[in-house]
Image (tube, rainbow over all chains, first blue to last red; front, side):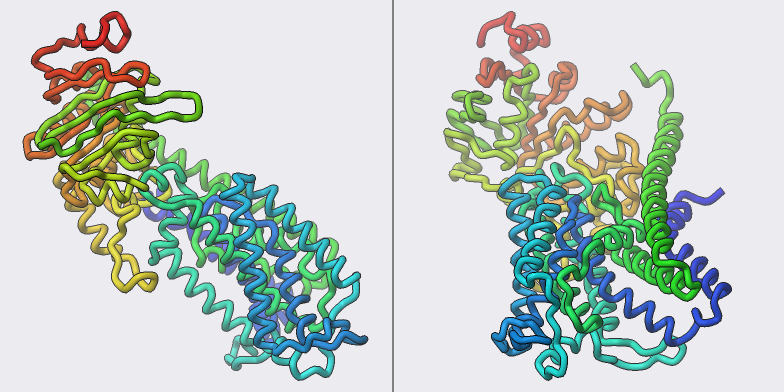
Length: 354
Length: 246
């Protein structure tokens, strides 16, 4: 029988065990899996998802949801390129020819502003986070479609656009055995490290856990929960826009439906990695494991030539499994707690009870 | 001089008058029992003292100086600590994290800092030892018994040496043996010069450790007298309305 400490350690690190098992499975299924090209593809695909999952993890730990990030991602990509390229075909930009660095700044500012506005609606407006972020998801997507009139924005043969694409496209270095590492992968890795530090070693992270665990208690102890929630949504929006900038460099032609449906994968990545939908639980490292697992499964199924339709089914099943595991974690915690309370009560003499 | 002086305190929530014209004071080294039926205004008064609520009118002064609390942190800075009835614990955090919640030890400057986990764990372990509790600082609170959880809440009050400690129903959800320990701690606080306000429905507890009893009914103070000049029967009558104000 496992000691309590080892038991909880096993539950909290389950994602890494699953990742190793899944990795080994795909290695046995395809000779192309364990190649530098494929490993590099897994990491590159994980980068954009990873950035969104970091933002969502902060929000989930505070006890909230943010459904709007997939639309903010699309807006970030489209807006950034639109500000840079000519209006005429084949670019269909705004003809503003904004300096690409200013365009990047505008994208990030827009994302942060959207996130902050969402936070204000939820805190000052006392509106439910699920409904608010769902509404904002639809509003922004509708705005993108109306604004672009359904046409893509492209950066063909445009040096300014090349600067905009740099984050998502540029190779950083090469690691033997792992393959080409892009700037996006490095940026996402650094983002996870910094975010992990904030959650574990910074007052901001500690307060997010407290608010997610017991908001009333946190406020009774002087924590300004509403202010933290607005900040967390601002971070989520900023990172969604950053992910949009990153994704632009990978797809080059920005369609108006870019990112649609992505939010489910983002939630799946966070929840599989151990971040609880109830708030107050989860780690950035666990979320990283969830991101890598999803990316590994996606690439592995692709190499096995599994139809994209069945990939959707499998992704849905993964989300269900993740939710099931989360529910079991809660149940097992409660079971262990009731057992340890019984053991404590047995130490108190019966004659002490009234 | 009274440590805490409250004059003509009123608190309204819309049309509801939770408190009306309440005067309250307490000295260092004094334990006051605050009693009253549900809805009498005890929790509201406690929240005003602890800085969670601002009074609608009236004056609050601490050590002779006017005090306006915009948050619990202001009250803490003036030496007021509270142990809430539900203990205000976050189950998802460790015992040490709960003890230091809102006033974590940090190294660094301003926003660039790092939490000092080791120092917090060590200090929390010292506090639990002083409280004679088996609580371990790195354990999650969700895995703790009622007595251990209470030790965590009490340890919070000893982080800084408070001048006034408020205890809201501290013996409501613990075993008989633990009740004796809690009452002993309250007596120790009083005997070492701290002011203590005990909100409790348990008459025996109040009459055992308190010097004075204050009774609220429907938002008004109807009694404020030394324990030695009262009795459980009189206080019961005051709470229920069988006896008028004394």
